[in-house]
Length: 81
Picture 1 (cartoon, one colour):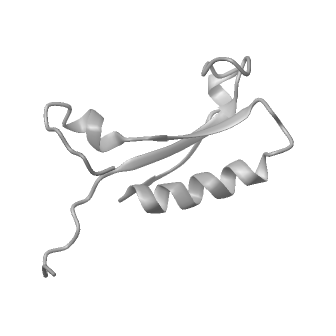
Picture 2: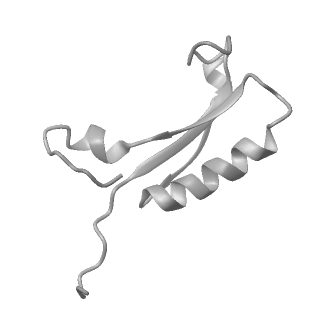
């Protein structure tokens, strides 16, 4: 095992109500919730799951995990999420 800290791979969790169940277009961009930015996929997934479970009764409400590290450095192939 290495003494180096794990590489920071930023992930954003966002959510909001969609215009339809078939797409990923938000009904009202002013109401899109920016839940937070997380240092790795595992912590983002934990928050995403909790938020999704809170809104399970609204079929059009969706939360997403955005892989910010891929947007910040798109030329670098990275197999880790």
